[in-house]
Amino acid sequence: MSMVKILALTDIHMKAAGRTIIGLDPYENFKRGFNHAVSRHPDAKRIILMGDLTNSGTMNEYTRVAEIIADCQIPITLMCGNHDQRNNLTAAFPNTPTDNNGFVQDAFIYGNTRVLTTDTQFGPPFLSYAHLGQYCEKRFAWLLDQLQQAKLARQSVALFAHHPPMKVGFKGMDQIRMRDDKRMLETLTTAGVPVHFLCGHIHRTISGSWHGHGFTVFKSTCHQMPLAFENPDLSLSTAEPAAYGVILLTNEGIIAHSEDFDIAEDDVQPATEAMPNT
Ligand SMILES: [Fe+2]
Ligand SMILES: [Fe+2]
Image (cartoon, rainbow, N blue to C red; front, side):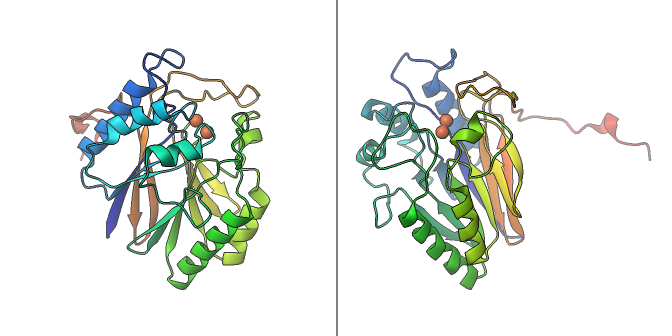
């Protein structure tokens, strides 16, 4: 089975030096997660940072992200989340590709998989209080074109989106998902291509299906969302172990693993005592 490995880190929420989130240091957490991922998976073909790279979108915060990824030999793709400022992101990382309308979107082909990294940030204009996602006419046109190309080439589609369009059962977070969920579904139906969504934003490992399309949501590299379905508070956070995603693109489909980098063990022993007697 041919296989291409992609690393995904999301919701870094970088802050200024000395600033923490529920006592966690976003800089140190991202540095540990990033270095863990790169050292364990040097064969990865690409690293995707899936939005909320920063907590406030300041140049200082982007500079601190840049410090950590500067020497990496693996190509890195950046995405835009609700806590980012698109103009500062592209100013801090001037080689960031954008589509014809200035959105931070890109497409890659690996084997028979098309990887799409989409920009689900509300606006422009940027509104710091708008945490819900938006995918406007121009972006849907870009996506439909990509999906139609995938259909013609018989490719699987790994669709990275910071904001999930689907509800996942959290009263609060479901309010700030991608608000164009119906239009997203119509676009997928028009194209006639099944996709697998790979999302961030919720800060929790979640998987499932949405109208026949698969989805995986990854944890933040910093603070996590507790399993509190009924609580409407958008800022609920817990210091559960952080993670990154390891995505395997194969000729049979898309596989998504989640690695809790602070508790991952390298030298595990085979559990021979657990094997049945033969
Ligand atoms: Fe986030
Ligand atoms: Fe977010």
